[in-house]
Image 1 (cartoon, one colour):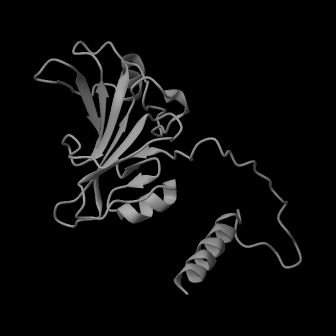
Image 2 (spheres, one colour):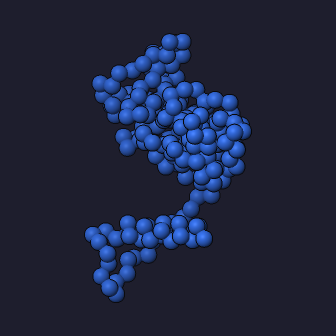
Image 3 (cartoon, one colour):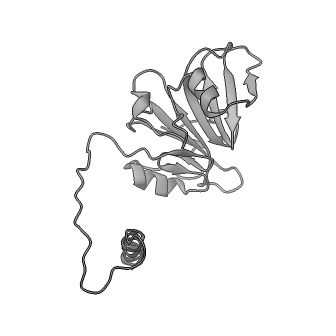
Length: 190
């Protein structure tokens, strides 16, 4: 019974949102639109302070798995899950909360060179995996950079989103985008 109500609410919300300037006058219809879905890769969405692509902070692992066509691990089975096959992202890794098992508390989009990062999610400023330091500096001028103490990378954090550049001198490209828990992904169950 829950699914039909949710579907009805989403459909009603979508139809309401499509009315620009308020509801249509009686007897008028909106022009029909068509779309061609792509079966090649899952949709990727955007990068915000609360999520990357289909993953959002506070989301249940089961909901994320359903949205991406994957199987979620049991909350007590492992602490992170990796999702592949998303446009522009080699791996989308999420960690679950220690306090509330089963809820996403960290999201990490990684580029290892296999996917085309330009096809991946972007911030409102157009920044994402594969962005250059020049692009980061243009989008976020005067933001402080942090150098990894081990000397392997530099990073920039803007409004809760961390962009990791693959060079200690800051001359490389973004190879990781992180939102939420600022720690390395924990044990992974794939």
